Image (tube, rainbow, N blue to C red):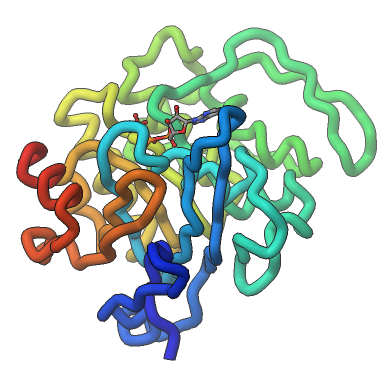
Length: 281
Ligand SMILES: Nc1ncnc2c1ncn2[C@@H]1O[C@H](COP(=O)(O)OP(=O)(O)OP(=O)(O)O)[C@@H](O)[C@H]1O
């Protein structure tokens, strides 16, 4: 029976008590095995991390600054290229999956939304024609499907905006007319237009006010409940992780040192993890 696994510290994988099948009833969506990253100066950024990410669950990733959280997250859709046979999506080594296909299936949202506003030429890979897109909210939402030669109808765009808790009237606006919170929800709608199976969120609300933060958190939870999307969220806010996550990974110094349920964080035993949790709460 598969177990959630954390980093190996002494050559052997340390098993955790959380059982993936018991939690989700299914095989993991993403499997990470012995993932190591060495920086140019020879220091270890990730130290043989192993982890199962259960399908349809929200996995929170917390830990001190510089501990490797973003590097871990970026490895999952090859924004940082992991070594072969270390990251698997539905059992398939992601380095063998076409990178555009992978990033459609494993979408990502960053700390700050980047919407395009000017004229952008999109080369449609399927039939090698060029489409011009102007940079409205609707254009942003249509971007991913456009790349695949699919055109979303106005209704499709409105549905995606509505799912991201945005009014359809925003569709004709440009990025500069939006608040950061609205722009982040547009970025989320744009990611959802690709119908991802997994969402990677790198501190998605750290630039947002509490109301916008709540809006985004609500959408994250709705995506799990209504669409069964698997989510990995890096956050500096332990309270946020406790609000949205089903399980929490504590990353310290390039290792996942603990995997716990959100209401069991006080049971963390690793000294650095305990100190981090005490200082953050
Ligand atoms: N491209 C890179 N080249 C060299 N070192 C890097 C690179 N990317 C990250 N690092 C280093 O790897 C370590 C982990 O960085 P990472 O951004 O993954 O940590 P983090 O836990 O997400 O930090 P934060 O919470 O501050 O965002 C840091 O020491 C960082 O300086």
